[in-house]
Structure formats: C-alpha cells, structure tokens
Image 1 (cartoon, rainbow, N blue to C red):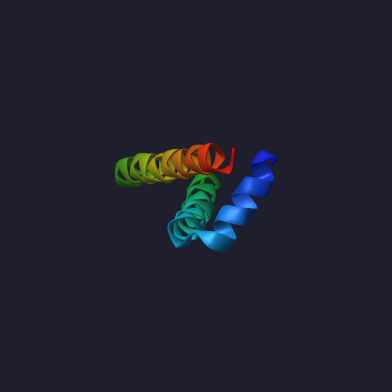
Image 2 (image 1 turned 60 degrees about the vertical axis):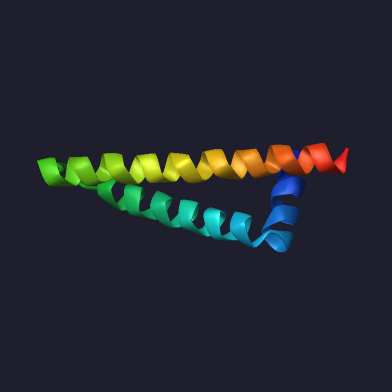
Length: 74
C-alpha cells in the first residue's frame, strides 16, 4: 500500500488522524496568511514560531500513526 493510500485510509478510519490532518491544514493556512505579510511584528514572529511548532507536532503524530498502520497491515 502506498503512503498516500494509507493516509486516505487513516482519514476514513481513524478519528485522531482525521482531526490531526484537519488541524495541520488549518495551521498551514494560518502560516500562509502570516507569510503573505511583508513584515511581522515581534509578537507575530513569536506566534508564527508557535504555529510552526504546533504544525510539526501534528505532522510527527500523523507520521507515527502511518508507521503503526504499516506494521499492522503487513
């Protein structure tokens, strides 16, 4: 099974994965909005870093769920 097929299966079968995926996408949109600004205030820079960390945590957890799925599927 290919990685993208596993991701789609997990989105359908695993509520945690679906929630993480939705949150990851939402954080991506927020970061894109911040990146579209010419300048960020110091507070906005801190918020941008915080959002990046949150996004990374979700991505790491989704990758962990994919690895677990692969173990069970094989």
